[in-house]
Image (tube, one colour):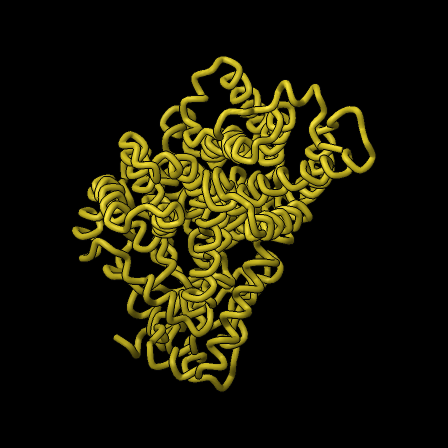
Length: 573
């Protein structure tokens, strides 16, 4: 028995699958669906924002701090140094020696009217993140039409995909913890929606794609993988190589025009339009070298690991990015999505199967999966150490959306097979998205609750430090306006209202040299990490005698504070 009933046949799309999803937005019914999905996604994100009251990561704190300084008229600067890789090493510090500015610009927009709080930044990201639901709906509908699903199944599956994206825990967290992840995800999905039309050579789509890629670059440098995905898609459609080169050059040129003002700014401030720390991150032997002062990454140390160790690191990174970034946070939906992709590729490879309109190699879903695959592979191979601290995680949003859409399509196909097997008189297409939502919603609730608890605990610790530390430092004779060294420089600088530079995971002698170079008289360790605070307490390590630990009275549990001994300071003069 056919999967399609007579009722479904009357609703079946017999026309060729549309290759351009953009004109559909002008239809009144489509506008209604878009607004409905946006509203549901916005409500979910406002609930997520209500759970998190403190930037869970220092990266989030960085973007919000720069946004606050922008609104206050200070420009792109911050009162913290988190890396010593790029000069000038001054305080206040010019912002974004490695990261990109768009996330801070987004956070700053509502701050001009509603105040420069963390909650205000979250509101901007909640509104931006709600766009992902209608964007995912468009991706799913494009794929469903290429699969020539009956109209009822197409509608239910595509709307279901939008609802799944609205309720996905990892995507909800990107609104509650403002950083580059969310704007890059939104721009990446928008770029993938444009790619089929751009590959077809349509000039408005090519121009729009160039603009979106330029904005994506101003969010994260992984935008280069979006450009590469466009080239791959064009080649898969058997477009002439010369034409692919011409289109890619045009798109890249438009993107470069968007990024040009930022490159000129970086050239004026840092002496180079491109961040030099990217090369350092490739050469990392251990993640703590990101904060290195005396111990910077070198090519010699990187190569000295040997080929077996290098390959092992890549394998560990690939496993981490697959399991810890995709499968565990997204949950069973990611597994279903991966299985659906494998099934689609297998079906496409069967003899006699046409690839006309194939969503596996064409269309916006294909663009998402190709972009995500390139990002996953490049990050795991090129940044196997840095990705353990979040490099792929911050750029994986487009792949998460692609997996969710693939899961919605795969679950719909499974329901259709059961329907055929059981000879159901109705399509019961709602079963697939309903089952996936039942899986996703509890997982999202657990993730948001855990994130909120973790953020609150961290915020309470930093607030306690901000209350107790000034008096303790003043009693030890430390200048109240001088810079501090700390393992959490961004959080501490914001809480204390004074400059803080990052504590490197290096010997006490090197930490003392850092303190001398910057005129810092105290070291604050919020939690044990690497060799500190144990190394500063050592009785035998060279340089440790120059650090005197303050008593724990009044300090939060687990916190250690050291001041530079007067005799060392005097001897160094």
